[in-house]
Length: 159
Image (cartoon, rainbow, N blue to C red; front, side, top):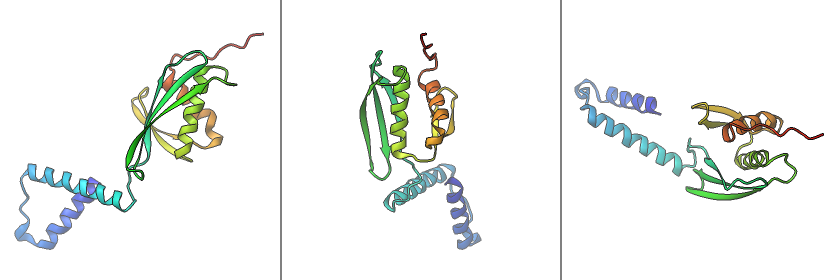
């Protein structure tokens, strides 16, 4: 977006001619670029074409052996508001509570996403692309288990 703003400034300067080609002080340029970016963002929101995608942050709390709570702090550009959901998790048929938590998180992700999406990985320190497609469930589960429970070791089935 910054590049587009710079190109638009260049076109305006060329249209005004060489007599106006003196550049404003650096602070004024910074203020103008921030103002233009804010205007562009507001216009995209108003027109429903925001480049800001829906997203959120998950927080695992009150984790026990068979019960847990996941808090989802979500945002959506279409709703124009932030929302917080407290999601109860029961172990149920899952082998352990960690797997049940990750399965619940995958369900919340799939409410908004159907294909690829960006995930801000704190473990890796970068943004990665993940898939919410059903056929990619095993890989998504593996990555989310590493993100939320880095020390996780699956239970060994008893004989």
